[in-house]
Length: 111
Length: 116
Image 1: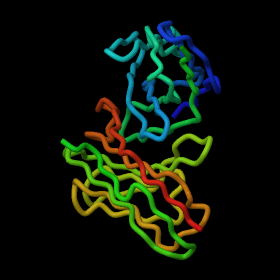
Image 2: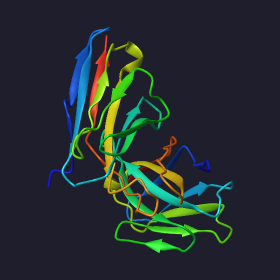
Image 3: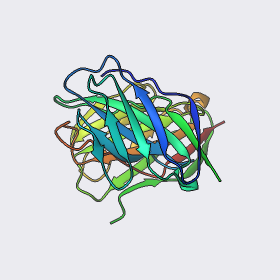
């Protein structure tokens, strides 16, 4: 599976959009991009995933560049409860594949 | 619907002791896995199972044993605990490990283990 690069930490003001970048320049055509988050001391929580089209659900939006070498997770109106570590993961689309978590981005949402 | 249940939530062991971390899911999920998380680190995969009777090693399997006799349960055994195994352990499950599935993993609340 391709490796990902994320900033170590980011800050965001409450009510503003949080845009979390992820670089996956070695991604191959059969790999999906997944986003999870982990609120302090809890188990990680699935947010969203995509292949090449932009995706949106009730939690967030995922924007994948046309060349698929990077993506951005967007939390449209960040709240204090969105303070968490956000993990960007790529996963092969063939056979069985486990999820490999890196160190992620620590997002701090402040009042 | 309880989801993924881990027990115990906290445990203190002495070096050399053995114990089992329990994980149960009530969602009829085919895939189950164990991760460990150390301070400042991401999650590292220990073992996983793609169905009853089938297990495989992850990134850091040494010192741990697993078995999968039922769909619901996936216990993690430490045969001789070492201080290096002090960590937070997470069990996770999904409908399938096949990537044609959504890939959504459901995690338990974690088990915090300290080995003295």
